[in-house]
Amino acid sequence: MTENVGGRPVAIVTGAARGIGRACAGALGEGGFHIVAHDREGDEERELLRGLGAEVRAVQADVADLARHGEIVDAAMEEWGRLDCLVNNAGVGAMRRGDLLDVSPESFDRCIQVNTRAVFFLSQMAARRMLEQGGGGGRHRSIINITSSNVVAVSVSRGEYCVSKCASTMTTKLFAVRLAEAGIGVYEVRPGIIETEMTRPVKERYDALIAGGGVPVGRWGKPGDVAAVVRAMAEGKMPYTVGEAVMVDGGLTMPKF
Image (cartoon, rainbow, N blue to C red; front, top):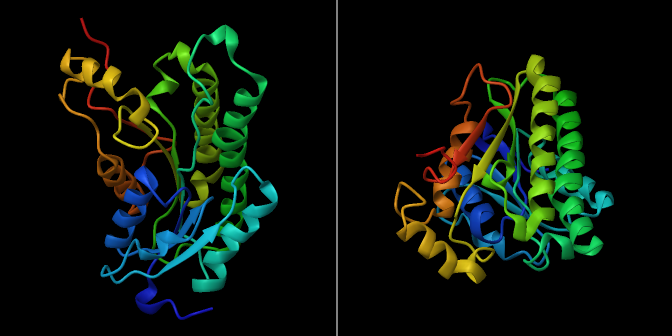
């Protein structure tokens, strides 16, 4: 274990190699966190925070494999001796968009394993470690779940994704109530149309939606838009809230007439 220079807080970000996860890791690094940067495919996220003064430890694992969760959480404890924030960002979409009546068990199970089951059990393990540490030593402690605007907006072409993200909304609420007395904030961020690899295949459709006024802000969301909210949550900028969910969708899901 290396010395935690300056008493920096420590955050785990899953799916940190690209998109929203990469932006979250960068924003937290700028905010003074050391980062455990998790991803399934490689350790290129080691280069994420160069020049920011933060330290990074990369962990390669599949979050759907619950047996690997210990490696992710232990990385924070081994490197810096503490854990202050978990950002559950890693996620998958439907294997194929199409008719709800054609959704395969394989695609459904994949969404549940990554977007629901992994979020629940990684939150459980992180919460146990935070409680074992005792008080936060003046640092705010948090668990932040990245879900989707599809927890409220129906997308029939990828029903399995919607179901899996809705379940993680309840996970947020459950852990928020369980951990509130310990001073551990549990929050949810619901991104809308964000410019990432996951949305690239449907870019034309979303371009048309935005051009037609479907997003009042009038533009695509950027990963940094989500990361800014995550950073505020991790830094404790939302005191006296429990299980708060923030829509980061430019007004996409706001009722209009």
